Every structure is written in structure tokens, then in C-alpha cells.
Length: 356
Image (cartoon, rainbow, N blue to C red; front, side, top):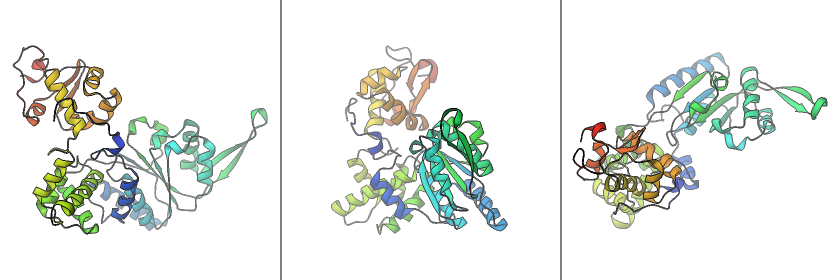
């Protein structure tokens, strides 16, 4: 691939993107574990949540409100459904962007049944008036509905049945402290280890009736960016390749060949990721280089490079953000099989940072 190869695929449609489209949502519904014992990974979160739910059931009370934070695709929605199942309660699902007015939230809250679980995805994107109404609803199980306008407006208190709010966010820092403090249990979802993702791949393959050996599962897990959603998506694409190009059995060689077709390399980088690294290394000698300049070099918007490609490259230790700009690490040169320029050579701005 040339350094200037780019992708015009939106972030939500990338094979290694963590967001879920319609197909992913449909498949996830079939693959989603139904209880905590079946849920793979997040050991500490599972242990703590199990205690919270067991204690609530023993008291015959509604479970405390739960806040789940972490990157997309790690299982926040799945855990919300497990919470409802463990408590034997129905679940109502909505999202922050869908609640633009306090009246929208009041309509949802007033229709809840006692003990029902309300799952509010991307809770940090809820409007401020609705957010302020939620404070009272979470703490006192009551909302004040405003009737009329101006001086004649009247606040009518509306009692709510006890319910459990499960909030999910990818950006916990954007939640105001008064809202965070009203959650009885807060958990942060971590990225998965390869061994955990192997278990996810094996479980999903069994449910999808796909034959896969241990090395094949390990190959897919190693390219899944620590995210179960991506692992399941890669499994489906490798399954397609195995059915068309082989006898249906997924081995290490078949998985590697299939993912090479989809341009996902051994570390999970796709075309956009590699384009960013290629431009940084070949055009700018490893940096430092400004974000806007780097985005122009790969033919992408600044936001796409910053929000889609950079987080994973930084997490993998291939790219660093510095006050002077973006800088490639020695691991980036090694991954692309390139030799870094000598310290002090023209175009090399990283000698003082990493010691060329």
C-alpha cells in the first residue's frame, strides 16, 4: 500500500470501528450473553455488580442506579440487559441524544413500572433541562411537571415508582458531578486481553455454527483491538471467506488470508491507520507535525484523524501527542518495516524525544 492510500469509509462503517450499525446490532442481539456467569471478561466489574444485584434481591429492593463508562463495543448495553434479567425486571432503552427536552424525559419516567430498568445510552449527550429533571427522579423518585407558561406556570409534582437507571457513557468526564454522584455503583469497562477475546470468538463461533480452531480464534482475537464487538465482526467476515475460499473451517492461515483481503493487519490497523503512520514517517520523518497538516497529507478531515485513527494508534504506542505535534514512536517504524532517520538528520524532529 502506498503512503497516501486513504479510506472514504465513514468511521461507523470501518471493519475495525467500534460503533455498531444495523447489522451489528442484529447479530449482537443473537450473541449477547443472558446472565453474569455467561458474560466474558470484565472480571472486577462482574464481581462487584454481582454483589450489588444479589444484595438488592435479598432485600427485595430495586437495585441502585448504575453508571457504566468505557469505549464503544465493550459490553455496556449487554450488562444493562443482564442487570434487568438478574433483577427479573423489564428494561426500557433510550439514549441521551433522543432526550432533547425535559418533557421527553418526563414522558418516559412517568410510564415506568415499579422496578423497571431504564437504560440511557450516551447519557452525557442529554440536554441540560432533562439532566436537571433526572437529578430529582434518581434521588427522590419524583419529577415536577411544569404546566403553563410565564407567571402563571405551575409545578405539579409527579410521584414515580422505584426504578433503576443504568447510564452508559464513552466520556465520563463530561458528566456533571451532581449526576455522577447520584449513581450508587460506577464501573469502568476496560479493553479486553487477547485470551479473553479468544473465548469471545469461540463462544460466538459456536452460536453462529462456525468451525474454528484455537489458532484461528487467536488470530482473530489479536486483530480485534481489545473489543468484543470488533472480534465478532471480524469473525463474520472470516467466516464468509472460509465458506467461499476454503472448506468452512477457520484456521490461522485462513483467518490471516481473510483479514489481509479486508486490509486489517496483525495489530488490527486498517487502511486509515496505516495511511496516517505512513504519512507521518515518510513525509515528515516521524514528526513532530501538526494535526491539520497530517490530516491534509492523508486526505481526511482533521476530526477523522483525531477521533477515529489516533486513539488506537496512541493506545498501541505507535504515535504520541506532544505540545509540538504528532510524533511517531520507534514501534511505528518497526511495525511498518522502515528505518528511522539518524538523529539530527533533516526532517527528523523526534531525536530529543525518543533518542534516534
